[in-house]
Length: 298
Image 1: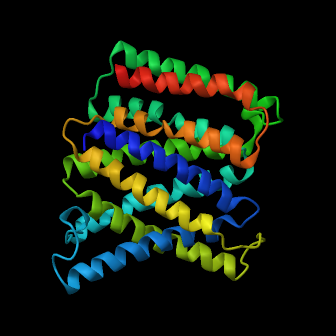
Image 2: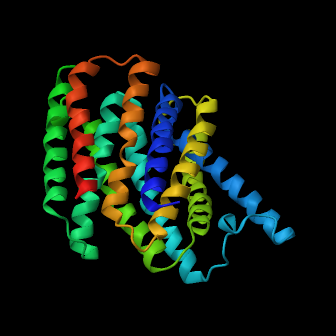
């Protein structure tokens, strides 16, 4: 599969993941959702690793998790810590914001990834890519105006700032992914398996704190959307990591393709959750997608 096709497939499943996330955290405690979603993923990978250890050759080569050194485990633990910080900010924000606003905000991630790739990886955008960044930023401000019409004022809404913070940290994660998969030679299965296991371990103390009522908290309700979150992200990330392993893949373009997920999430927010003012938001969402397309064409 080409890295472009893999990126588009990842975008579709990432949009499904965004919708499942909104359904899971809506009127629900966030920290247990984070823990159980990652526990589902970790359990699947631990089962696959146990099956391969018991009978080598059980799994297709693409799903085999390679043995790692202590230093390599530390690298993947760092990846999990970065994502844990991003998700903690983003999940609390997604719980409070309409998904038709949250998904486009998160879709601006490729802009920050592109800027990081410029500074840290030596990638150089064309004029079309630069135009795509400008269109995306302009559309973000248009989305801000649309959000203000339904009472979400970007400049003073703490949930928007939490989501922006999570998006920026995710951009750092995307750059680190390219380093791990493109330069360090980790396989997609190895990164995803240990990333999922370490995430579950990182969220475990927070889940225990929630259970023991160390702070005021909301009640938790198990929903099948938590399992759907886990499955959607597993598929989205697996094909995404595979794309990044391609030596011809640019992290800025892979991230741009991947954020086409905003179309899936936006449509789902309107159709499944009945979110209002979608006509006012639509031009800004289309603008973000155009910005992504310009970045890709460049």
